[in-house]
Length: 153
Image (tube, rainbow, N blue to C red; front, top):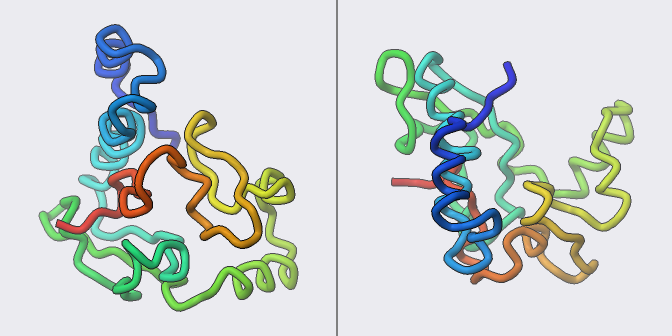
């Protein structure tokens, strides 16, 4: 399925705050409309979902990540929603070893220093010594480097 934001909610946000308001007041509202709300609608039809989250992506927000959990941020078809994080214990090196060994297709931006890829205006390449998600929402504090999809309530 291709998920899209609610056109009216997006139009209202851009009309009220401008196209790049997230640089001024944070990305949460924009991500809420563009990412979180469409995913929430889809997850409401399911019993479980699978993510690619890893603990090593963000020590501030993902250190306690487990492989299977009850998703407390979203509801599923019958209320409860199971969230599978099969890569929780993998490192970035293990992921790339797997990609190479099995010739898994990947986004070409990774070859240009983009270690974590999100929306175009909110993503930039990182330096080798920087944490993987440092290229996301670089104008905000590191503890806020989540769009709201993987929040814990």
